[in-house]
Image (cartoon, rainbow, N blue to C red):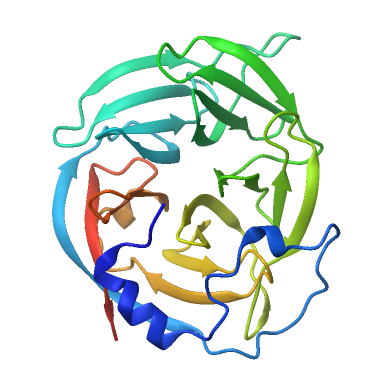
Length: 271
């Protein structure tokens, strides 16, 4: 996935060499905490367009795929869902409830990632990811992981996962086994509450839970290279920002949040 073209040149100039380091450069063990010695660029944004969004959707994951959104929602007391959503209208064109845990009860759905012909949807506290067929949403398998599940994306080689801490986990595509991890840091130290994730042109973009900040992370070092604040969006009073999607063909960038009435197409600007 490429960085939205409207900000690509600005970021290349404003952020230090090494911004596009590959996640494959991560060590096989956790990187030690280290404060960044590189500058962090803070961006502004403009709203290009606004689209309807289901205001009952407690959005946990958002992915652009073939001119629609793949969206994962989570909720206790109601079904967690996987959805295919028409961007222009917000209409749900395909939906299924998450299947139940093997022991009964229900899953609280979390982040989603689309890779090849599969979709993986994390769950919050039950250490299980459900694997679906991308087209039919039929369940085709499950993965297990020994932590909470929050956000999920991939870099074309490995899954990248958050668990609400300052750690990003890199996981095997076929087994979901942990391959490496890195701690995310900025000029003040560890950056926690990493939530929904999107991999854009060599960086991991992450919502920070219970804030309106999105941070851009070098996955090789864990250092924050850029950030911007969605605090001016009108939907923030309804719920926290959570949901980042990018269309690589047109460089369109989308953001939304839990229980928001809108999805916003935005363009980043240099401050």
